Image (cartoon, rainbow, N blue to C red):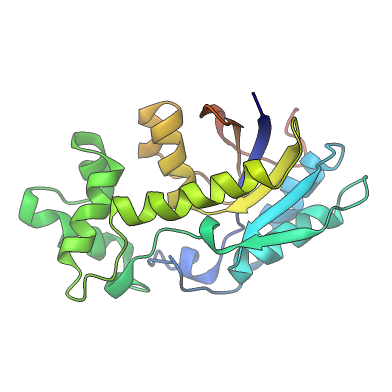
Length: 222
């Protein structure tokens, strides 16, 4: 059985994060706090040797991965990008206020927030409701999301040797969805913090989240 270990880092805070707006495939620069998020993750991981480093192809993830690996005490593997590791695509709602978006999506069904939908139904139902509500139907539904993300997971598994340790810099919604599917469903109700660490074991027989949303600061214990 082939097995790799993923260290999933949510990218550092961006300006769109700071303003609490929907940031899926759209992009914005890291804030000063976001750069600190990445530096803290790099300091925490500086003595962890990675056989591969991946990020989504968004600049916020690419920049976070670079800052992390600049702190490493080991030779840095080539950093690779993958469009399959992007955030959920929010379509018409890209850039909109997050609270307003989820109220518009959920209110016809009796929900006010994403967390309300996820707690009563699931994150995948939330994706489907957004797709239905989007007047252009461009927002990814659950099937579209998982078809893409599963290609990313297959890429991580097939492109790397057995027992590789892989750093993956990716996004809030993707990490939450993995946690809900392969770990504790309740984890999917909690946003992973910018710069936080989630660990996942990936094999050719399945996947398992082994820890979720560990907040990394310079004094965080390993």
